[in-house]
Length: 336
Image (cartoon, rainbow, N blue to C red; front, side):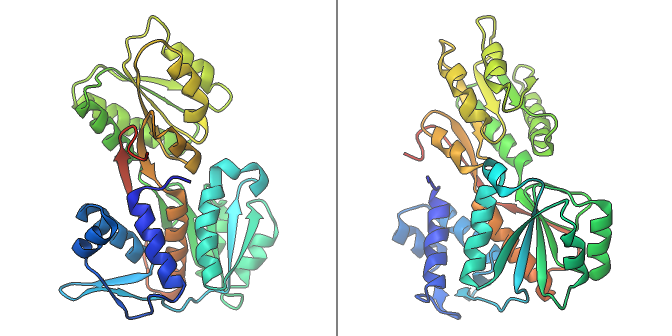
């Protein structure tokens, strides 16, 4: 799987910590020294250290440095709540699963996948804290009854992959800022007549669309054309949007497999089109040679959710919060 420079540094340092090469209390080199070591910019290493701290692997002390830490966990198991079985939700949540599982495995924590409608969830929550179990809702909102039970039992729960107004603790990708930055980068490269395709029934797509419309207006480009599609209609919708009558020179496509499925229509339209995509899962990174990519890692979000859940269980994170995974905008060919 293709990774950004930031992700490669995070994975390398995390691997060394988990392998015991970097023990607790070890002082890491600063961002400048790491930049030289990895052959990247200071901005990239600073982002990597920020993510490592968010994941709970390091602690950054002002005027002192960055130190390795692996705090004890208050959980013995984690329940991942999904709206469908993993076998039919692979493109939607498999990267989240990988991120969570990699952290859980290194700490000896069991991970169990449970459907949202499974009746055993209530008994698991009722058994907290004796059961020492935490819950992560993956791209699904808990029912009102389940939310009420979570609050009554003060059981650790994190919503992953979406901004959930009914949940105290959320970890997700900032699709509004990412889509805004994507449009800004494409504007800087000369594109002016934008279109946007997304699924109006998906909350994350709506957030990105609102940011798209606002950014196009702010930059004074042509009014953005917004079209609705899903996995079954994306190819036909894209072909229609880029027909001979179209004046668009740029198109942003949201969602899962939709950018990959739309590619034949983009490449076959007979003219140069700037394509912008959001890396909703790792398959989208395959378009990095031909598209602008708002690159954020769902695996990194899974690791951040694991860290947040652990810190909630230990009482280190209190009150409501939404944590966002870092992202970067990659021009076509940047990942080659």
